[in-house]
Length: 140
Image 1 (tube, one colour):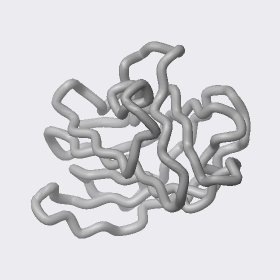
Image 2 (cartoon, one colour):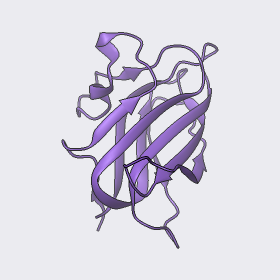
Image 3 (tube, one colour):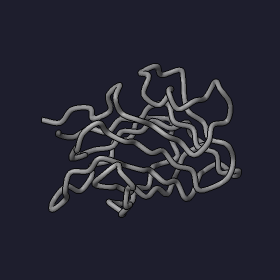
Image 4 (tube, rainbow, N blue to C red):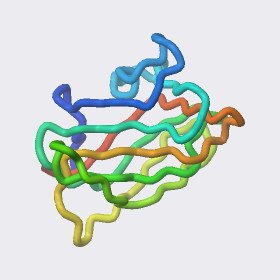
């Protein structure tokens, strides 16, 4: 059974924020009216450091249409101490205002402690990304 792997002990880092009203805390606050918005320019990223090793099985994202990271690389690291990043998979979200769930490949994968979503292309001309919900589900 999978559960949310993001807890209050998960450390979140982002590449940029548009302003204080669109900070990283809004990615996981459960409020559908708040969001994280990056500054313009690509790539943008969200980095998660879990308190213990996890096996992610799905990624849940809700973007604002028109500000969607339409090309994303999901990178992972086994350890949070000087992480060595490797590509886990690529995702291609749709440019829509609805919750999108991405099943992640797990066959033959090891548990990880760090995850980074790197957005290389945005549906916004200026490269901004806006996300209302972020969740990573899986097993401990």
